[in-house]
Image (cartoon, rainbow, N blue to C red; front, side):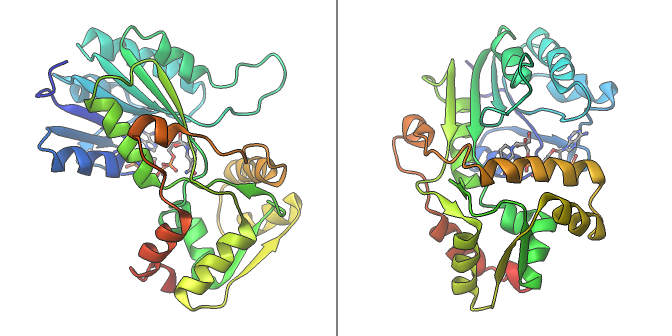
Length: 278
Ligand SMILES: NC(=O)c1ccc[n+]([C@@H]2O[C@H](COP(=O)([O-])OP(=O)(O)OC[C@H]3O[C@@H](n4cnc5c(N)ncnc54)[C@H](OP(=O)(O)O)[C@@H]3O)[C@@H](O)[C@H]2O)c1
């Protein structure tokens, strides 16, 4: 594959896309970081923005739209991408989503596998960076109270820097085609563990409040979250509470040949930026 062609990074302003774009630029690649508010305008809801971002692109990092029938939308976009000459697709997916019996878990993964391009699928745990780069979670830390319906379940939070490193490897190197990488950090942490680590690193008092889903919905709505998003959070928290995706995975080691970054390292470097002091 010719790597002098531009790389298209969807979600180029997001937690992983931003990191993927900057890593590629540091290596001297031509990068098109695309999103609604990014330097290159791309909107899943406006098909007129699709073709221009694909022009001349050799490989693309995909985050699906999460709008309506996201897999069908992704299928249309992937077709256009392959017809435009894109040879390699890297999809940021999820760990195996829990769906009602008979429903397909993650149809977007099949879309990418059937696209005709070389593909790699990334299946990350919760990002550590949710606590610092997502406004809703960050504000809770600034306020000193983490409120979640996640009980005392554990999650192997993964560092977005590791996800970006894997994405860059898959976009630029051979040997990752046809791989699905489950990406986790090296350890499981409860929300109480997370709270303790951040309190210690910032020197600020912090408390974790495990609440019922109903109370969490009331809390989230009162903080301005849309009802649909509050419901999604309750679903995600229930999976943490059940330890459904608590198991560690070896995707970072398989893709990069090194261990994933520990949550404590993330907390230490993030606390030093002052982001949790408001
Ligand atoms: N966060 C996690 O812990 C986690 C864990 C596992 C998997 N994931 C998956 O990772 C993906 C991204 O999540 P994230 O937390 O990284 O989100 P994020 O940081 O908020 O990034 C989302 C990106 O998508 C862009 N975007 C949003 N709506 C768009 C639209 N209609 N058209 C074009 N671009 C749009 C946003 O930029 P603009 O606003 O500029 O458009 C932003 O760059 C999701 O598929 C999620 O399921 C996340």
